[in-house]
Length: 428
Ligand SMILES: NC(=O)C1=CN([C@@H]2O[C@H](COP(=O)(O)OP(=O)(O)OC[C@H]3O[C@@H](n4cnc5c(N)ncnc54)[C@H](O)[C@@H]3O)[C@@H](O)[C@H]2O)C=CC1
Ligand SMILES: N[C@@H](CC=O)C(=O)O
Ligand code: NA
Image (cartoon, rainbow, N blue to C red; front, side, top):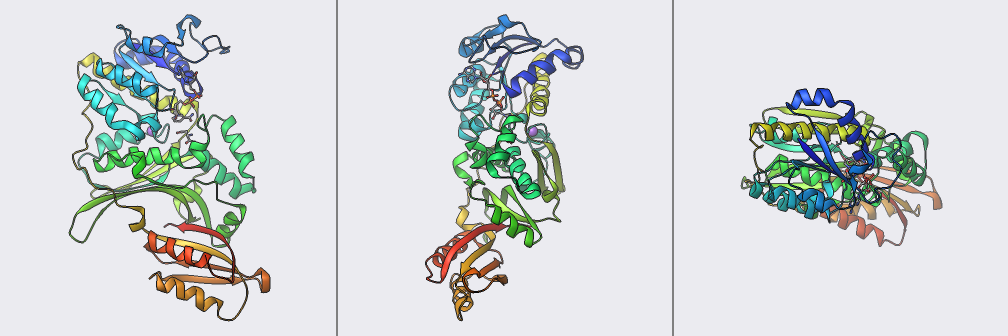
């Protein structure tokens, strides 16, 4: 089996290492040796230390490598939309199997890749694209095909989990924690993708597409990152016995007429420290899948980093290589359900709102009146401080997100509200 490797960075170098170190076992498992015939990179002359690979394999001509007739499997660990899409479409249409870790591309235009795979009769595997090493896509794509998945919830971005865990545990600053996560190989080439929630949203779209048999694109996912989460939010969460996590929440719901729709969102949320997701620290990921017959399933492990991600890539390489040797391919994309996307405004959420207010008679009544006007029921109210230091913390019951957002907007305009110190959703 001849492999073309596109990219040799954090993940690619570990793919090379694992292919070399486990060559004998992999040959036995596949039934044929796996041989890298070329590696496309930006800088072929770069010093790669003791990487066990022939320097003559490096090239800058990725497309030329993909088009080589002797290539059976294209492994893409470069990232980004273009030129990766062009390479992979070329490979798939020519009947070459593709293994990719590129969640950004799958979320942006997975349909084009799946269509090219069908056209070329080729395999398209992408286990590494969501939750790194954790076997999650294969269970959704294969093991749960006899069930109806209703909800997928979890932590799917290692970088932001690393940052939030550090802020919570040691009071570390945002920038300092991000630098460490980048040095450890967790962050994307542009870490904005991590901290602004784009990476988690891409993964949410892939999970929802597989779980609900519907093409869910990046644009269908409501997204908020963690850049607005402050030390004060973290302290406020602690006071309530909670911690803050960047959550991915994808649900399949039925309306009053029994019609199903899909809602997919990524945003930071306060969760109770007693919830299993609260103890997911460092760059670990954890995902709960709920299905009608199976009930609740939990997947946990390393969601980022070179070696863990390479483990998932290698698993896919073995799978597609076996298929090729057997002259078969995996089932095509399943998108028959084609469910509509429910807007974020209709999702039922709970808010934690912290207001800096003037401590005067009537303030609480006015604030409560605004919640009532938008039909948002208050669960708890707590006031601390006095005079200019008064802080009002309100936690709501579940309400449509649009009603909660409108409530906060109206509170912002009140003369006695000096600042809205934090607005966070509360889950579980
Ligand atoms: N680092 C991680 O923990 C994880 C990364 N991924 C995904 O894996 C992919 C690779 O990520 P990393 O290895 O972290 O990235 P990286 O930035 O460390 O490596 C990228 C590689 O692609 C090469 N490259 C970039 N543009 C190229 C071009 N035009 N032609 C040829 N080669 C080019 C670079 O030379 C480098 O070797 C991305 O899609 C990323 O989202 C997925 C899961 C985890
Ligand atoms: N940047 C990503 C890498 C894995 O997908 C993350 O931090 O989770
Ligand atoms: Na995975």
